[in-house]
Image (cartoon, rainbow, N blue to C red; front, side, top):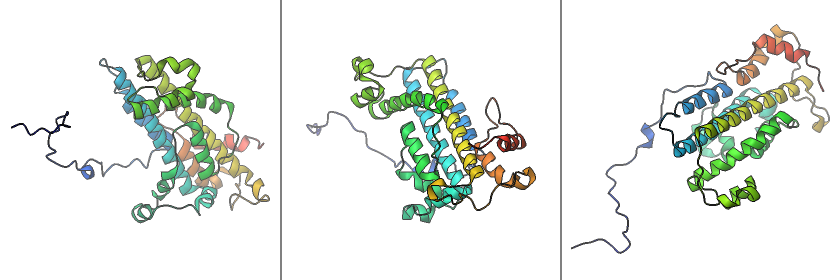
Length: 284
């Protein structure tokens, strides 16, 4: 006798074993020697290997998700590393709360990650607000970053489509992308060709590099001026720079190591050259 229930339109095979999530992580993995930007570059190089002769639009959607994920990983690593070395950032987050579980299980080096649990990196505006709230980046956003941010915003909206609707365009995404140009594509799936993937990869990479330069400039500018105009001119940092490379090197290197790249096609200038250019640059 058939014991199929009236609601069983889908046959569900029995689960014969649990999925052990605790065995799928690489316990020996260590990328602490990499700068955040180099970590992003290496992650995206792995994504680029996926594009092959068997390319399909569905694969393109996965690559899009991977690039946004690599961006979020970059931002989290950048903020964490800055909190560990930047005196002023430490004063900003001093009174912020983290969960008991995070405080109990995280090492001192990873604890700043817990601060970011309630922050969103879903679009460039959320990213800038997080940078402002966590590490005090209030410098006006330069035109080069604003320009690429507008394009990155579009990629973020496409990412929402991929995550929540398997690539189909929803009404909220259409509004943000421009309903006048996208209304005819509502509930239609994204179909990314190889050239589209190359274009979005360039946009995301340029956005991350622009953020890297922007935050680096903002932090160094803050160190150079060392005067908080919002708090009656009190110092951001206990010590001023001496403008002697040998004396400042240890302190300067902490920041240089966070923002410099060895993995990019065009590696960063040497630490001494970077310091000299910084010293020669006049304050606003």
